[in-house]
Amino acid sequence: MSQKPFLRVDNIRKRFGPIIASDGVSLEIEEGEIHSLLGENGAGKSVLMSMICGMVRPDEGEIVYKGQSVRFNSPREAIRQRIGMVHQHFMLVPNLTVAENYILGQGSALRVINDMDKVHAKIRELSDRYALDVRPDALVEDLSVGEQQRVEILKALFHGIDLLILDEPTAVLTPQETDRLLALMGDLVKDGKTVVFISHKLDEVMRVSNRISVMRDGRVVHTVNVGETNARELARMMVGRDVRMELPRSPEPAGRVVLSVENLTCRAETGLPAVRNVSLNVRAGEIVGIAGVSGNGQTELSLALSGLLPVDSGRVMLNGKDITGLDPASINACAFSHIPEDRHKHGVVLSLSLSENTILQRYDQAPFASRGMLNRRAISEHTRDLIQRFRVKSRDENQAIGALSGGNQQKLVVARELARKPDFILVNQLARGIDIGAMEFVMEEMLKQRDNGRAILLISTELEELFAICDRILVMFHGEILGELPPDRTRLDELGLLMAGNTDQPALAS
Image 1: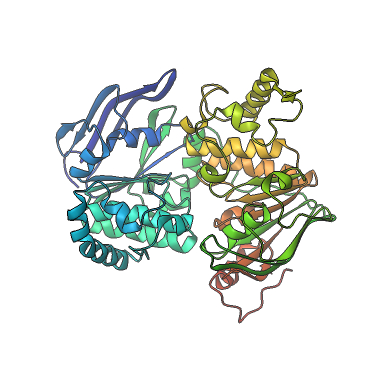
Image 2: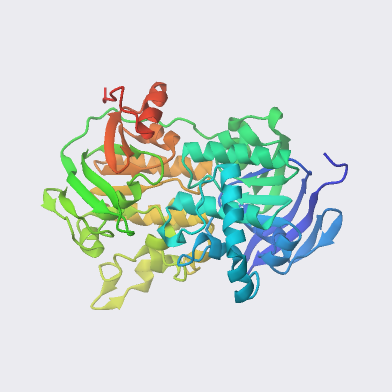
């Protein structure tokens, strides 16, 4: 490592109105290291990195990069200095191809047309080298969330970087994809690159980091060598208290069938088959998990159940009522709550306030409306209660939800859906993008819902999430349910085989 820090941040301050995002942050990154950044949602991690890569300008302080004081006015200026950032929320144009996204704004139309063959070849070369499986001619809007994340990572490598900042890059990846990405970080460091890794997943941070910095309330409060700490200690540094790694569960047996899915078949938005003859039941007082590698029909299953995707055949019954083919509004009226995989597309309206987002499905219902008029007081009181109970970090209920961190947006979506007191809760990626303290909290809330008799279907690529709170786990592969297992970590290998489509050894619930 170099004697002088590769990157030094000195007393950086940033305020957004009354919100202090960075409160005198100081941090040093050494050349050729993987430096992880931990902290609760809203601790200031993403804002700090956005200032380093030119997306946000600091109010005070200094950034020293390669021995020179710098202040970038745009991400393009940072990229020219070989600093790239992969953001938690994708920066891609959906109706363009992967290659077109990569060369967007890079030159004249004529030059772009002439260089497209070279662009495609370079994407394929990088994709093969790092095993990212990115197709240059694919339309971004046709890609799964996990595939879009790989596109973002390769985009930074495509433009050439010495410093790569990854903001929650594994939040949308499968375990196999995560392993490849963590290996990729090691390969980049071997090639002389430097990596800043923002993550909430302590096991990943412990696996790849050289050093770890913990942020709290807009400041760096701890920096430690990875060999001098452990996951439990890091969790305590992040939230200021001990965090339970295992959650107690009630032994109460499940009750009546709330959701019944019979031979459901549907297609993806591209028209290709996605869900094939899926049948399952979810009973009152149980959490049923669905595991699987991203892109095996889980997204389409959740969209079809919630009325966001047409059903080709089969039947969906909720509390004995056939809801197959109903529109989302009608399904929402049937004691059905949905925490979606893509909160920006299906969960929130970014430009609206927190108050407006909390009543999206109930703006015309009491106590939030009467005789066609909104009851602003009731809406505000309801939203403030949710903010307080779910520890959503925000200025107030009138702040635009788009100004919140991704984890705080997710907590508000979870709060809103649970507040509706549904009989059935469909969850796709419950803990995506939220820190370990918030994860503990939302999982406890889900267990409370189960103990109160709700039926919950939890789709997740996070096996630890499924093991932590599910009563049984189904595995999807190529749009089919291949098997069922209990949440037993000793059968992880068996679960992994099913996720890979291997059915030679039967997997039956015990």
